[in-house]
Image (cartoon, rainbow, N blue to C red; front, side, top):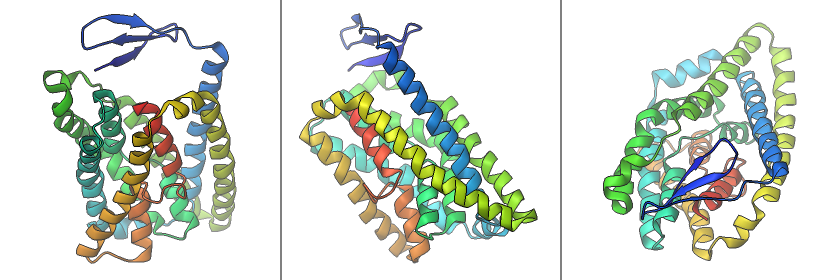
Length: 292
């Protein structure tokens, strides 16, 4: 198994199963700069999108789902129960090497992000439920993500399973970037619906442009990784969303929750409509980068 950790000089130190340390060549300066630019774009885009999405819902919509949390509970079961098990099953089925399998596990155990809220808005789904589930999954991730990673990584790491570091700071940051702008947006809508509508339209337009720019940067930075990825990795990155789509429908059907607004949200929360949902594209990119 190989572990990576950043050093102050932007180089990467590798520790192998044999305990030997190696240092990769330092990244080219322009790549570091471009990577930072992409991070800034995504961060600003998240804030803008969530402000716009918050401006599109009423406080009463959130309260309604809080009184009947069935939809959110099902989503959390899928997020932290079904998806990690699915990632584990695909890792075994395709015979992935340890570092590839752990890449699959990390992606499948991670909480949902902000892009699914954006696409839910565009397909006229249940935006309030979408935002509620994003918030809940980020909170539950503090316990659910480390537990799932520890549980399923036992197969490959055994006694070294505790060496995997969970990005708690990133989870906290994501939670703040999601809930803060949403609350502000709902306040704006409460006092001035016309201004809130303008904010939503501007934010949704900027969302598409920012995501497109970040996608181009990712392809420039990581094109070599995409060429090195094996067919099995591509197969897993495609089959996992399809499997999530199917299992999401089954869970929703069993719970009598199959309404189009809910179904769209549930599918999007698990990045199930690959190549269509904005969140599915970076999910697949992350999948290939992490496992290659």
